[in-house]
Picture (cartoon, one colour):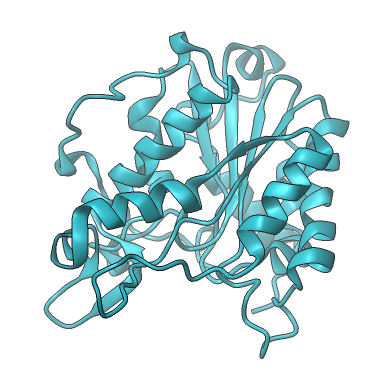
Length: 268
């Protein structure tokens, strides 16, 4: 669905953590470093009508210290292209500041060749759009970070977890090396995790309910597990320092996940 710039701007305000809501001073921005997420439904904030579906971006704050806040701009159904075309990258760039981080994860919807509003080709347009995020962040003194797309739950007849994203992860890895951008290889790490868990146990991590068998989106345990991978990769790549992360080896109660009621600004 096409949005006006005003609607995108309202959504951007809704994505700002509550701790900063209503604080307009430059001093408040300076006190907090921000980690912005640009991505799709696997990372996005979910609301009460979608529970127990959970984006990994909802769980990432559990692994970060309070002086590093997460602004989750990921939205269901978006690709690297449609996110830009709808003005969502512009909304982030209008508020991002030096020292902030822009974490970018796309591919699930870039793969949809039947939809010209979202489709990108891995080695051409996908990389071209990703460069816009890289260049946009750098132009504002922020640090861009690329994350390969988290894997779906898919197994072959022998019980082996199989990749589903084609050439997109390889294209992102190549671009990260070319542009000297930190890369979080969440595709490889999540595939290895699903392999360790196996066919049956992975159902506990995905949005399997009494009425739905969803092998793409997560429930609270899955979102927490993927957010832990993201946090560990942010530490490994030195995007974050040891002082920035917490609870990497601790159990996170699923009760910490909550689904607020959707507001008009958050619906897109």
